[in-house]
Length: 559
Image 1: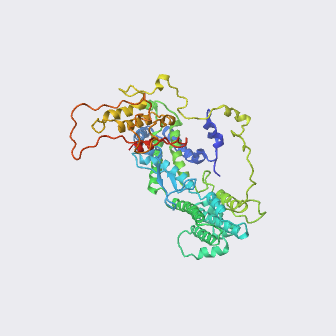
Image 2: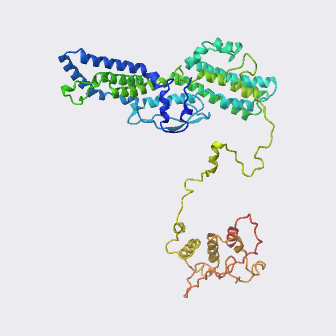
Image 3: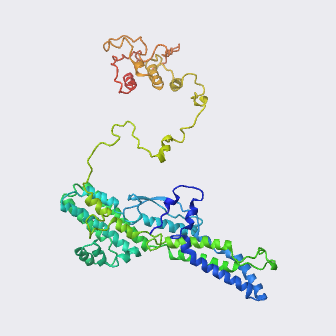
């Protein structure tokens, strides 16, 4: 049974983890006490032999051996069992057996991959911990699949119910077959296929088909094929109403089958044996050297660092507890499908997710998958208005223990409380610009454009610049109403417009530049016609408020 202590550390307080030190089940003391007692017994035996058994000459030789072991024990790379945290790297995941799936059962996960760094040997325990958690993420849970089955396989009759229950039973059978292949606890519960049949996961006819398949490999995937065939048959009968629903159902089955395959591969491909061996040898050889090198010597001999004579090596025992404890952590987590205190509760998952109801009252012990596709199918409560139907500001009530939370303001953002001085909130004008900020852009363009013979009148150019200036200064639509009295004349009969630009007030209109005096430049080709005024179209009615500004339309008419 998994040791759960999250409720004990729900709130951080003084000495919060100290109360966990007294727990025995699943603790490091339960794992390590035998090795610790063995190490301490050997140390005390050597210490007693040095003090009471050896002769003076033998003591001098033993003291040299102690100094030698203490000097060179540090060369053993015991840091193999420790190391920094391995970085995470997000990589795509297919729906097959390539990578573990995430808890949301989606085909893209964030998988922890150990990348090469300078301290690769120190990643052993980190590697084992990530491997342990990824194996749990690969546990085949039916929650997503049963929701899709309940929503896509229709029919309240006996056959519709049979379809839904059989589909979920096939999924449960596939999970049981793979779990009994990797978990010793599940194998002890279902040691043969006969036990699987007797438990109700497989019928006798299905067992015949299963055993008649000529395959020497693990056949945990066979029920998934049966699931696909039965789903296709339900589609042909109209129980599944369209191909999109069938596609969704098979996609969820593929995710489920991929998790079963990943459990098989995790059981097949272990952490390389040489890696485990070198870490174990490093730890054990280091503390074998410490049995001699950490002995307390006679202070009368004047050896450096041996001024104190104690019987029990306190800090050596702590070092053994830490290093050997880390090795024990890796030993327990490297295969979480055993029967240790913190191994996965595989039999509980089978009971919770897949166990069919065979004996006893029909509703005595409903399981999750069968409950979702059978009793809960098309079972809805009457639709009614919720409690906050007419409320303008719906808010759930608080108890007396949580009433203080109502006084806390909602989070608006990390910059919400920042205050600035009034002078720091003023916009700054560009260098050399005296007018409003909105007119700087248009004046700059006007200064860049040359004044030539064809633009001396300034009519068309002036109107374009006026439009641009008005657009940049964000003038409202009411100031853009046409005020030219000459615009209502028929086309071709209007005299030269003397009302100026209808889009600007006379105070805002810039004076038209005059042509410089002097001889006109010759123009090649036919004689140039004198500059004529382009008649303006008739003013349009006021635009609706939901239309954008008509600046673009007026500019097109000027062109």
